Amino acid sequence: MLVREDDVMAATRHEEVERKFAVEPDTECPSFSDIAAVAEVARAVEIDLEALYFDTVEGELLRPAAAGRRGRRGLAREGPSGPGTRTETRLPLGRAVRTVPKRLRVLVEPVIGSRPLVPVARVTTHRTERALRDASGADIALFCDDVVRTERLVPPTLHRHWREWEIELTDGNRDLLETLTAAVVAAGARPAPASSKVARALAEDAPERGDEPPSTPPRRRSDASEVLRAYLAEQLVVLREHDAGLQGEKVHQLRIAARRLRSVLASYQEHVDPGIVEPVREELRWLGLSLGPARDFEVLRRHLDEMLDGELGQPNDTASASLRSRIDHDLEQAHRAGRHAALEAVASERYGRLVTSLEAIVESPTALPPSTRRARSALPGILARDVRRVRRAAEVVTRSAPGHAHDAALHEVRKKAKRLRYSAESAIPVLGTPAKTLVTQAKALQEALGAHQDAVAARAWLQDLAARADGDVTVAFGAGRLHAGEQLRARSAERDYEEALRQLPRKHVRTWLRGRTT
Image 1: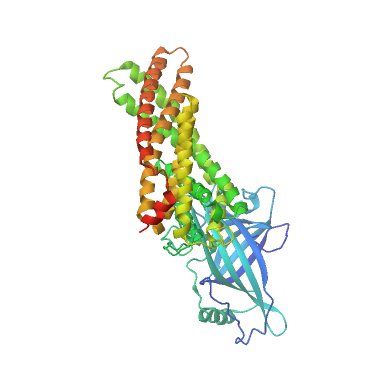
Image 2 (image 1 turned 30 degrees about the vertical axis):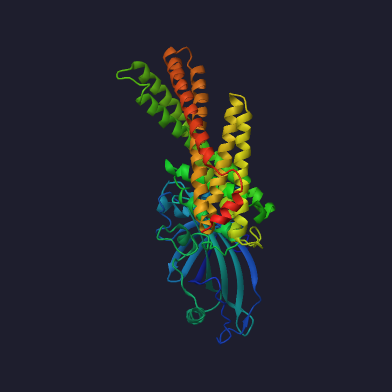
């Protein structure tokens, strides 16, 4: 809800005289009891507001401080009218939720011409509003205490949250505004860093307080929930840093952050509220699956190019050139489709809700309730359990028959190794050297089995390529040569895996971790 509760059926204009102030989360609101013009402060009213802002991709409307926004009960075009004054043109809501009506668009066409308007920011506000009244009981001003969360919807995407106060004159004069300003400044407020919430949401300047969820580095005396909270907050920062544009390495880093978040929430299962956390883990799984093809096809194309450049390629080899052309064409199309799917996922409301849910978990004592055990006591058990998971999965490998079942069993070991690696990473601030050792051991397993899984995926794709060759012997034969190379790569990777597995501790892991804690 952006505009107030006026359900007008025609456009109306509304002028606001207001001032905004930045304030710390724990600052107490002023009483206004010593201001002669204020005879009464009305009972507080709590309101939840939500607005979606529109602008051109180039940001023409924001430059003169005029932007279109959509609230739950109506639409508005904002623009400046003078110092501390803003004029709104309001319309009732239509059916469309992500487009601007023609009656509002026509007001900004002198600025934007025919360029499209797109959503650029979402602002949600929990407002505690108090009316200030004179001796006759008439409202003369509104004092608003706002907790604000914003999401920038255009690159670079950014989430912010802060607290601010706002004074809006309703039937008062400028002298009253100055008096009220002096009162809130005396209470600890300072001028807001931006003229509006949306301007602050869209700012690309240096990070400010509230850009990222607060976290305290865990100490050896921390409990397990504090360790988990710090690790989640760290990965949430990574998630946000890489969700804009999704070029190259950004997809990889975003996917890894999603994996780390999902994995540690599972490892610390006895230290979380499953009713809150499990739905978020499922959404993190969705995100990982959405990002997978873009990264996987990019890696496959680079690897096959390297093979064609190496021992399988020959100078002036027409067959290799023809095969390379076909591979590049098919994988480029697949990568483009994968990147489009990834961009759609990250731009979706579903992703926005996921980030908001992760923020809530990091900040909520309910989702991560305080533990009765210190981390030094609890973490060795968590890591020992994850080591046992790797060992049990490895036993399945030894019993599996060659072929698909064997490859699938190795892939399960890889997933368990990643889980161990991420839980050990989270424990480093508390357990020190032994946790670092486990990270190194799990990483060696993960990398060996990652190479094996890449070879498995490449063989499957090459088989499909040969089947789609439509009688092109050059492509079919070349795909066969590459397939043979992938078989050799898989065997080499499995030997590396067996060596890495021998380095992983077998027994008494909990005692080892406790005994070596530094």
